[in-house]
Length: 445
Image 1 (tube, rainbow, N blue to C red):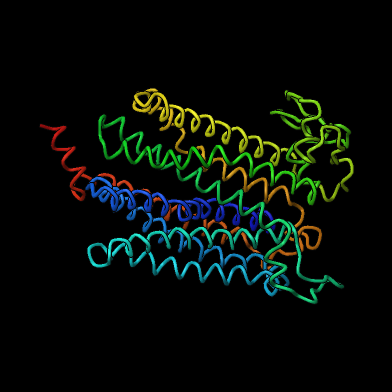
Image 2 (image 1 turned 45 degrees about the vertical axis):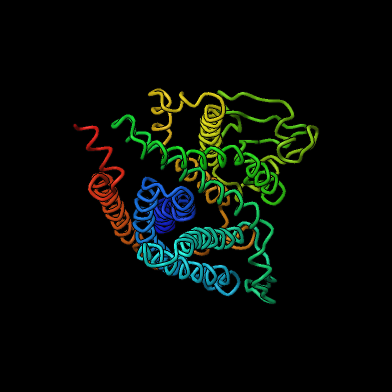
C-alpha cells in the first residue's frame, strides 16, 4: 500500500468514526434538554427518567468522542506535517476555540450528571442546555477549519509560504457558513432519526411502553423538522460549491461537459473514460437552476478543468446521490410523522410505521458519511484548495500502512466498547428508572 493511500485511508477511517460521535455530541444534549424541560413543566417521573437515561448516553458518546478526537489531532501532525506547518498558524484559531468549547461542555456535563437534586432544578436544566450549545459550537469551529481547506482565506501565498496572516478572515472564510449550517442540521437529522429508530425498535419489542413512545416522539420531532429544513441548507451549500469549486460541483453531478442550459442528472453510473453517465435520468435546465438560480445559466463541466485537477468522479457522484436519496427518505418519513401527529395520531403507534422508523435508524449517519465523502474526495487533488496538493502534504515517513492498521484496530475497539456500553444501558433500564420498572412489572404480571 503506497504511503499517500495509507494516509488518506487512515484519515477516512478516523473521520468516519469520529463524525458519528460528533453529531451525537451536537444534537443529543438538546433531546435531553427537551425531556428535561417537560419534566420541569409537568413533574412526571417518566420525563425525569428519560432525561437521566439520555444523559448517560450523552456521557458515553462524549467520552468516546474525546478519545477519537484526540487520535485525530495526533494524526494531523503524524500524517500531514507539511500541511500543518503551513496551515497551523492560519487556521489554528477555530481549533483553539473548539478546545475552549469542549472544556465548557465537559464542565457543564459534569454539573448535569452529578447535579440532580443538588442544584436548583432550572440551574441544573440550564447546565444541560450549555452542554448542547457547547457541542454545537465545537462542531461549528471544526467545520470552519475544514471550510478553510475548501475556501482558503486570510493569507497571501508567496513562493510556497504564507504571509500577512489574518486568523479571523481565515476562520470566517467564504465556505464556513454554508458548511456549518449544513453540518449542524445534518447532526440533528442523523441523531434524531437514530434515537427515534432505537426507541421504535424497543417499542416493537415492548408494545405500549409510554417511556419509549415519548422518547420516540421527541427524537422524531427533532429529526423530522431538521430533515425537512435540510434541503434548504443543501441548496445554499450547492450554490456555494458551484461558485467556488466548479470541479467538485461537476464531479458531484457527473457533469462532464460545459453546457447552457445544463440538465440535472438523477442516479446513473459515471464512466470517466468515455465521459458519459449510464442509466441516468436527465432533467433539462434543472442543474442550471440549482447551481445559479437561473434555468438558462451555463454550468462549468469537467472538460473545463485540467486533467490533473479533476476529482474522482465515480466516488463523488455516487456519494452525493446516496446523501440526497437518504435525505429525501428521511424528509418523507418526517413529513408523515408530522402529518400523523397533527391529524391521525393513532397511526404513529402502528407496527408498520414503527418498523419504518426503526429501519430508518442508520439513514442519517449514512447521509453524513456520504456528505463528508463528497466534501473530502470532491476537493481532491487539493488538501488546501488551489494552494497545496494532498500529495505534497503527506509525511515522508515510510511505512504509513502500519499506523493505518493500528488506528483502525483502535477505532474498532472503541466501537465495540461503545456498543457494549449502550447495550448494557438499554438492558438495565427497568432496574435504574422507576417509570420503566413500573411498565415492566405491569407487563409481566
